[in-house]
View 1 (tube, rainbow, N blue to C red):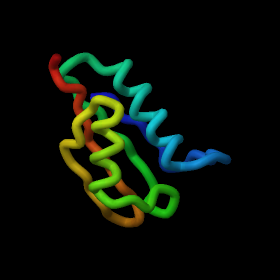
View 2: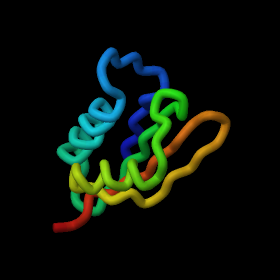
View 3: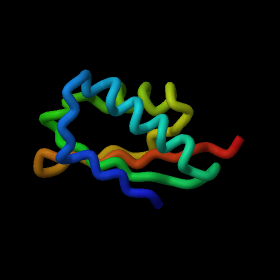
Length: 82
């Protein structure tokens, strides 16, 4: 599993588009059926599960799990087998 730690990033632009870019890059890194975990801070990415799910689908990943604790969000995504 790839772990993408985005907790302490400082993106000057739109966090939504930044995270979409992170997910798109993961799509190209992952093999079909492989999972990745994305670590985020809730204050920088204050989105609901529906938003994260839609973003994952847009980048052809599937959101398997979303954990929230201590101001952090951990997303587990999978590149589906074709």
